[in-house]
Image (cartoon, rainbow, N blue to C red; front, side):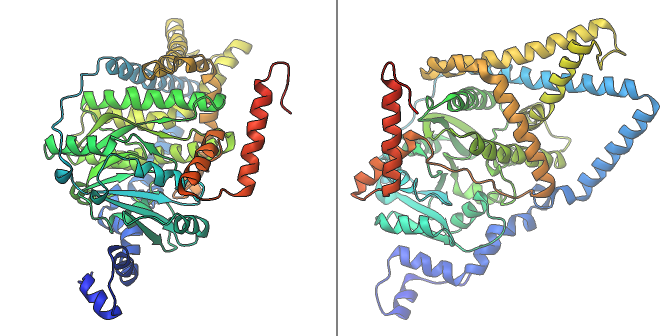
Length: 532
């Protein structure tokens, strides 16, 4: 990019220019270069690590064609034996995925105490750039700004980038209405493909000033000490520490049965699985928010893949492949748990599709140096999450067919093997339910444990989402299923409180909806009454 200083801008405009205006002028001058960096550069520089045109690559095509030919030949020779063998492999894989999760949970029970950190004075803290990619999030923006303002971090050491899409007029209007202070910089991303969160993050990264980069989503409420804790950990760490991942959980776990199950899942994932992976020295598939990176390392590995819809998990694995490590800290960011089934399905199908993309990318880049920790993270954790969801209907269908008609796909094998596989299937399912019930206890959320009895329903939903994801992987691989936020009663109440703090009026329709919900809740709570 051509060199340009604030002095150049002031001379050409004949007036003083602040940092925010200077940044906007720079982005306007280099719009095409920024667009290329955000959409094309990663695939051009790291083609084998990009999910762009993933299913069209020669290696994937060759593998698929070979697999189809081999399976067809085997079926022609001995169809029953092939079907039985396939069923046995599916059962073994499913049991392996369940066993790994049980193993990780046990390891997480013996987490070492966190090491003492060296406290840093405010003047010694690094500048941290907060990247907040936002699309159709006008309702959540006041709460996010308030949450950032509550962070225990000096204002002059924060560089906040609110990354907005050019055609998202409502969110831009809301940002301007909040009259944000000098920490906040609005970055307007011009229309470009793909329209994904990682593309927006790359656009923001090109404008970042910080030594560290952190990602926050629209509905996030990070613990106030989170950034200071991360900065102090980085100051004492070696050069191999690339990322600090905070834990994620929800502020509305009791909204309904779906939020309870979602909270159980997050308690397992962030309080047990990820810390256990770290202790094993395995790669950590990052969560989509509250990951703090060293900027130089993030740039060195190419940043995010704009075509991968779980760019976080992919980046965590890529960091490990490059010799860097991630640590999980005991600081929590609270989010809004999805309380609507359709909205949950859109979000989950995107996650499943991203896990499939990530698995394919990292399978394509296997080397002889790959160790067992990478196998656990890629094949049994990331891949296992998606493929177990795809396989569940077939496993249960096989059990139902045998129970109803006495016909088993494993008939060609000895009875002892059939009994062992049935026991493994039952044990795998029961262990997952037990883990879900155990997961929230550490957070003092034991009241949610009975919801674990509904995990079979949750698995059915995940399976539906996985099959939607597979269809999209084939037809719309980089399509970003937008998750709507602000749907829960708790989220609406928090928005109203945030607007009150800014001295702004809430939308009248939103106020009426909130009042109606409060009235309905009061009726439900009153003995002998039923809400309509």
